[in-house]
Image (tube, rainbow, N blue to C red; front, side, top):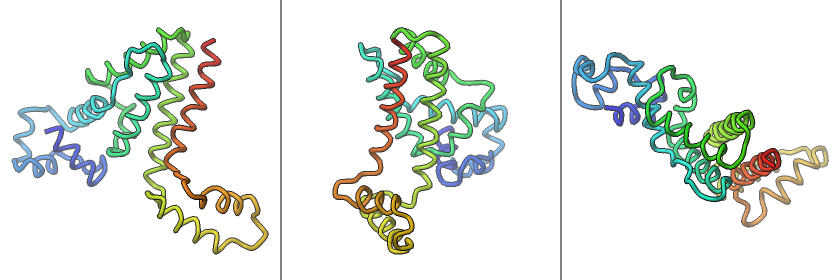
Length: 203
């Protein structure tokens, strides 16, 4: 049932998750769902937990940065497929077991690496805010491939007032339109800046 609810949300957003639509996705009557869950809130709790379960837990390895980095890339990949979940993930008052295990594992990596409890809390907030913000931004960009970047950036460049916006022109001509530019690499660059700053606080 949770898989059906996720498919519904992937097509229509979290607002589309209703008992009737989930039942339609399953090919059953809506009332039959109440044999499995008490209400819609329980379905929302369940889909959030399912999304957390899909995100790779940070590995218990020697380098905390590698573990947190891998987890961040996994979270980005999962949430890019289910961006509707972003507004739900921190709103549930009855988190499921996968959600709890995930938070505990992330905190465990940071605490074992020597971060104080307050800094570990700041780190989780900072990293998760970065991931969520990046996913939302990426979901709304008018580009997905290098060809898209060239088309969109070239179109903007063609309409810029000549000589009036030199720094934006420079960004487009000397950066965005250069061979090999990949806008998706910005995620890793920003994440590394955050990890560098956290490493300085750990020491």
